[in-house]
Length: 287
Ligand code: OGA
Ligand code: MN
Image (cartoon, rainbow, N blue to C red; front, side):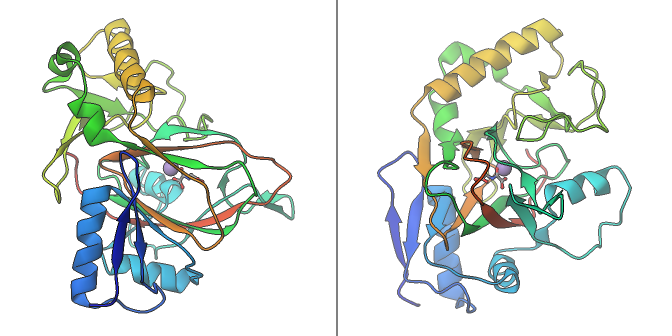
């Protein structure tokens, strides 16, 4: 095995993986060691990895099939394109070229969320690498949703037992409404239903699975009760100590588990360029 070193952060989740060059194929033992670190630490940081997109795809593929970027997942869900379109890099950027944004999410805050939970089979993980970053701002925060579940007060844990919520695609993680989704009552809108307690297929642990707050709805409850219960759950997670914050350097690759971790991003100066490229690992139906 190559000289892999797993260095956990002094935080509720996350570890840096040192000693690997991600431009070349990993041997089977190293792949399994990285997978084990991913399942144990939820978020992995690899520094100084100046990959091409092809190398980024090749690295990701060693851990499972690639998934599509969010906009493609929605087009596939709406039956607008075939699911056998080739995978593509998802560009996350505020940069405008020839009057067009080169990527998604702009320079604003991205609120707490898991990626693409608005489809039946959301991606297992996202792998985001930095090509250009501001000197300050645009930090990304990750939340341990195992600990968030385990620390729920008993009455709240009992209140969500066996319950599921709807993951409506109406809002982007940047808080913008997607024009195609016009229903404003979350109890009536479209969207897949996922369990609030989700078992991670690789780690066997239960995590709180919230997706995003906007237009969420707990199935079977009157809307006002759903809103009240969601507010209590979100107060618990955002008020707790379940977070690791990452300040980006160029060449970082951050790989998060979308099934047991949420993330958010700070806003940054709109006049400074931030360019990130992202791949996704395909997931499984949440249970
Ligand atoms: C994402 C995302 C955060 C960031 O790519 O899914 O939320 O730091 N990005 O840009
Ligand atoms: Mn995201």
